[in-house]
Figure 1 (tube, rainbow, N blue to C red):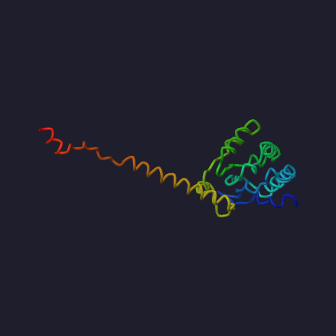
Figure 2 (cartoon, rainbow, N blue to C red; figure 1 turned 90 degrees about the vertical axis):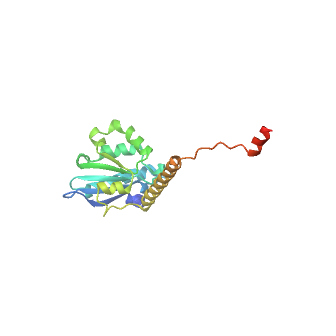
Length: 200
C-alpha cells in the first residue's frame, strides 16, 4: 500500500446523479505514475487492485466513470495491456452496472488506444463511451458539485477556451477585412501641361 500512496488520488467519488445511489466515479489520469519511474509495472499492478477494490466499495447500483484525460502527458497514460487487464478482471457486475464512461478532453492518443482495444472490449461497452471537450460540456451531463477536478485539468480547460476564443476572434477579424469593399482605382489624369504641349 505504501508504494501506491502517492497515486491514491487517481480515483475519487464524485457524488451521485439521477435517482437512487447512482455513483459518479472520477478517474484522474494526471495522478498516474510516470512510466519511466522504477517499479512502474509493480506500482500499476497494485494500483489496479486498489482501483477495483475502490469501485466495489463505492458502487452500490448503477454508476458512471469520468475519465479526466486533460493535462495528462503521454508518459502517464496507461498502456493497452493495463487497460485490457482492468477490463478482463473487473467483476461482471461492475461492467454491467457501468452506464457511461465519459472521457473529458480526449486526445488522438486515447482515441487510438480505444480503437486498438476494440478486439477485447465488447460492443456494449464501447457504446457506453462518451467524449466531452470541456468542463462546461461535462457539467451538462453530470452534476459537478462533488466532482474533484484536478487544478492542472482546470488550467488546461481554461487555456483551451482562451485559445479557441482567440482563434475565433482572429477569424472574425479576417472575415471583416475581406468584407470591406475596396475603392476602385481611378485612372490618373494626364497633366494639363502635357495636353498643351501636344497641341503645339
